[in-house]
Image 1 (cartoon, rainbow, N blue to C red):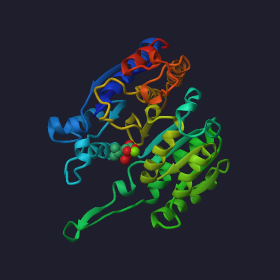
Image 2 (cartoon, protein in one colour):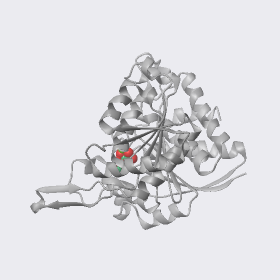
Image 3 (cartoon, helix red, strand yellow):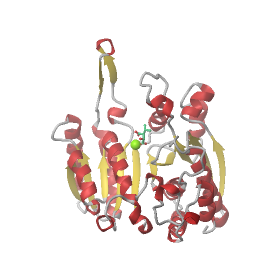
Image 4 (cartoon, rainbow, N blue to C red):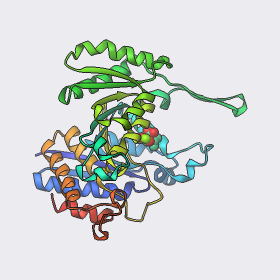
Length: 357
Ligand code: IPM
Ligand code: MG
C-alpha cells in the first residue's frame, strides 16, 4: 500500500479538462489497488498571472516541493503569442518550474497504439512497430542561456550553452534506459557547426565505453529530422538537447497519430512532473472535446516512474488500449470512417476508460 501526496497543476486552456480525467484515473487506481492518494491543486501560467501577477507563484512552488509527484496540464495563452513585447508570459512559469525543481530529464515515449496506425499522416507500413523513447535535456541550452537586445532593440541574441555535467547526467539516464530496451542509443546534435554540440558529442563519446553493451549512433539534427519520417523504426532511445528535443518530439508526435496521445515525464533532482506534450489548445478550450488520453498516460508514467507502481501503470495503458480497440475516439484521432456514436468528448472518453479500471 502506497501513501502519496499528488499535486494537480492544471494550468491553462484544456489543461483543466484533461487533468480532471487524469485525476479520476489516479483515484480509481488508488481504490482498486488499495493505495492512499491525497491531492492538492495549484496555479501556473496565464491563470496564475491573472490571479497573482506571477506565472509561478511562490505558493505553487512550495506546494510542488512538498508533493510526491505532480500531474501537470499545460500553459499558454494566445494573447501573448502575438505580443512579443509582453514582459510576463505564461511559459516563464513552466521554465522556472523546470529549473527550480531541477527537472533536467524530459522523457517523451512515442508509443504507437495499433488502432491508430491510420490516424497518422505517415504510411502505416512505415510506422508499424515504431517505439521511441526520447530523452530531451530540459534545464539548459538556449532556453536558459544569456539573451539580450542590443543596438536600441534592433539586434537580439540567445546563447546555446551546455556544461559537461549537464550532458553527462542526461546521457547516463539515456544509456541506462537503452540497456533495458534494444541497447541502441542515438545522440542528436549539430556538431558540424556548433561548439556546444561538439562538447555534447565529446561527453557522449567519453562515457560510452562505460556502457559497452549499448551501441551509440550520432546524428545531426537535420538528418535526424529527416530520418524520423523516412524510417521511424530505426529509432529507439534518443538523447538530445533542449531545443532540438523540443522540435524533434513534436515531429515524432505525428508517428503516434496525434499530440493528444503523448505523455511525458520530467525528472531530475526532486519531485517529478508528468504532463501531456500537447499545449493549452485555446481553440478547443471549454468545448469538452479535448483528448484526455495524454493526461491519463501521464498519470501512468507518474505511477511507474515516481512511485514504482508498474502494475498500476500497465493497468492504465491496457485500459487505453481497450477503449481504442472498442473503436472509441476523440475528435483528434477520429477519421472519416469513425461512426458518429464512437466519437466522444473529454468526459465521455474518461468515463469509457474508467469502465475498464
Ligand atoms: C514543450 C513546450 C514548451 C517548450 C513551451 C510551452 C515553452 O513546447 O514542453 O515542449 O518549448 O519546452
Ligand atoms: Mg514543445
